[in-house]
Length: 84
Picture (cartoon, rainbow, N blue to C red):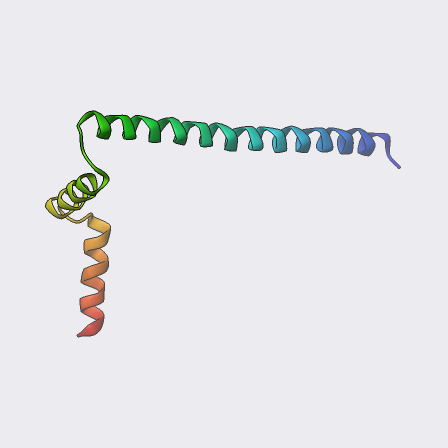
């Protein structure tokens, strides 16, 4: 077998192992990040003295007050066109 092939194959395996380790670390960092974000959100809600039900009602009200995203409006228009 060509010695260059062995060298390239060894480097390929080494890189694959590094990539796998980095992907695992990235997932762990994303998990830690989400946990910290959740703790911040919970802290803000508790700091305001809100219950979970009050927060849910506030979020529903804010969604209803905002205009629909353009992509959702386009889908709605396409659906009405198809029905006619």
